[in-house]
Image (cartoon, rainbow, N blue to C red; front, side, top):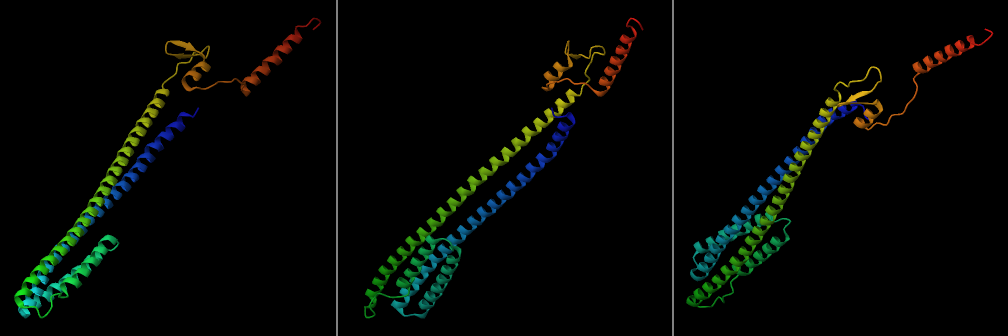
Length: 272
């Protein structure tokens, strides 16, 4: 049997160490959850930046197509200036998009397609230079409509991919958050159960410290309403098996009594 003092000491240290361990674990879970929140917020911000750049690029493509078509038809420098400003802004948007899409091979391929469309549609003119101006205007209008549709389709695909990526990240963050919440609840439950067990142990120790009534004559112990031998009491209450021995004091006393008895017997023999 573990001595009561040792049990009380163990319960005391468990009552201190266990809450500290749980507190450290809770701090770690809170830190991890905070990091996931920051990552989720950064993902949302990243997606909105990409979508804003794609929308700006789409508006500038319309300006570039309008400037190109107007310059080819009228030859006015104002249209050429509009075209040059739009192309320069589009190239800047592409550079920013490549930075934001670093590590995203799908979006990098879309940006390559985007750049190729700009080179083939906005920086060249497939209309023969000797085409009459009225026919050139019609041809450039048709070509511009086709160009805008191709760019719109590609940019829509890029926005959709970015939205899907954001949804996937948010779902993963939500699953991780739920997992962390489950861990927190489990830690709280373990702490409550352990504290209940510790309190129960301490209360049981207090109960066992109550006064035990021992018979001064027979050495029996009063258990409830009956008197039982000490061996039976220890077995019942503590699960202790009792063996018997002889203390030094009892052995010395027994030896002294045996010597006295032997001496007395010798004195009582006939002839003495």
